[in-house]
Picture 1 (cartoon, helix red, strand yellow):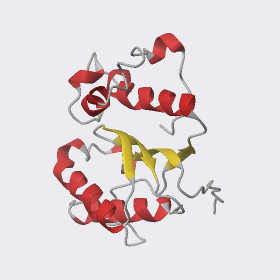
Picture 2: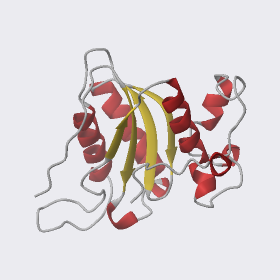
Picture 3: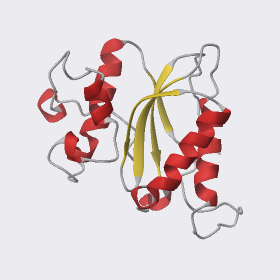
Picture 4: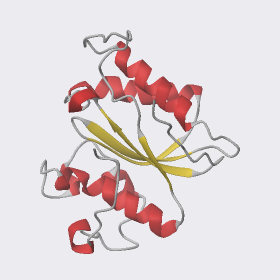
Length: 172
C-alpha cells in the first residue's frame, strides 16, 4: 500500500484538488448537493474558502484553516461522505460508493505570491479546460467574489499560459 505523506500545519492555507471516480461528470450536475456538503462540513468543522472552482469532474479550492487546527483530511472525508450519500452510483468490493477518487491532492501555501498563483489557477481552470473563454463566464467559481473583494483590481488578471504557469496542481 502507498505511503502518503501530508504536510499538516495548524491554521495554514492550503490548495486542494479533488477528483471524481474515473472522472465522472458528477459535480456540476449535482451542484446543489455539493453546496450542501460544503455548508454541512463548514458547520461541523469551520474553515474559510478563499477561492473555489467546480468543474464537472474535479474541483480546486484554497482553504484557510482556523488557528491551531490542522484537520483538512477530516474535513474532506466528511464533505465527500455527505455528498456521496445523495448520489446514486455503484458500490465497489470495499463497500465504497464510486463517487470520488480515494485521495486528494494538497499543497501548503508558502507565501502571498504562491497564494496569488493558485488563486489565478483556480479561476483560470474553466478556460484551461475549454469550458469558457473568460473566467467571468463560468458560474461555478468564486471569480465574482474575488473581483468584488478587489483581488483583481489590485493586480491585473494574469493569463496563466502567458505566464507559463503549468505547475503541478494535482490534475491526474
